[in-house]
Image (cartoon, rainbow, N blue to C red):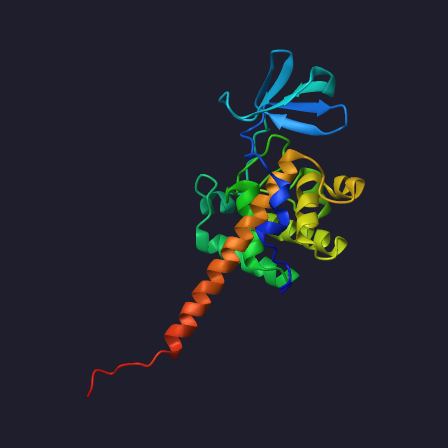
Length: 246
């Protein structure tokens, strides 16, 4: 396994200072080229507020001259019909947890990746929903864009095994490209390797920084839980056994 791919949250504490946005409805482009997804925007006392959720409390504020464009984010396309075999396996987009785990184990073994890293990626990308479709058209458990899926040989992104196999192969490629730097590989998975190369590091996009922090936090949580369980099992096995006799 790539055992060294384990990063504490202290290493990414500066990645995110605000909560993740809800489902975005607008894309706002700043003069510096950054793009921010938000629910809606409004001008308040000469400043432009980008609301990150449906309420009025979670927003980022800019001067009007700092914004060059505001675009509506289109609704995601309806997912195509999957095969009958897949439809009978998935209920409302949710796979049996044991089935999903086995798919991740198989993919992890093929690419020498920790299964808990893959599970953390699935949780962040699709919330374990095999029929998930993002606002930009990414599909399935690991949210593959159609062009990326095609390049990976994935013919149907809504077939979980195909999607997991393709997404794992893509993550493996990114880890190799960035010399097992997990933060950079995750940033490239979210924003594209072009953005990572352009900024020579994690791009200054709110969505990407939140994403990287979320995946690493979940991965760390799973690894710590796994280590604690193993330690408990070892302690139980080495404890003296009482047979009830004197």
